[in-house]
Length: 168
Image (cartoon, rainbow, N blue to C red; front, side):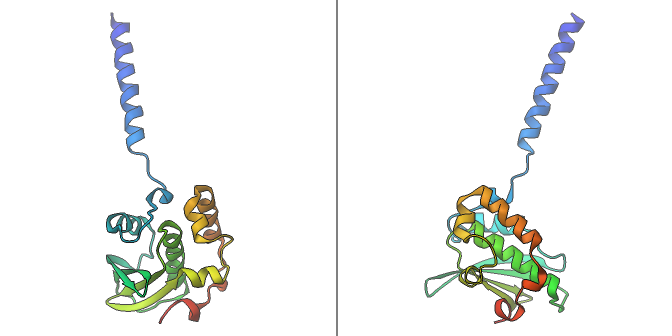
């Protein structure tokens, strides 16, 4: 009888542990992709999942539609006035993820303490051929998206052209 009870208890414990691990599994960044920047909930969830520089404190997002351009404004609070190469590179990398994961996103503007500090355009980045594929290709294929992640990790910081992407 004790063996039977022990077997039942072990089965329940195994089932519980298996169930918990399924529910606690982290989603990959790719799982947050969305067709439309206008889906504010999905866009906000995606922005919150990104790893922005520790000097920036996320505040809110705003959607801006001018001249058929779908623009995402991301607002931060910060005590830093020093927008060094590492911070700009971090913003560029995160903008690249957003272009790959929000299908109809055209432009991103970063505001810090209410002033615009950084701007990125999907068309500009694609024209410069910084990455091997178009953002549409990264959106359509999880395998290609992981390729983009590796390219971003290996991106040479000297390839980042300061005057062309930031500070309008």
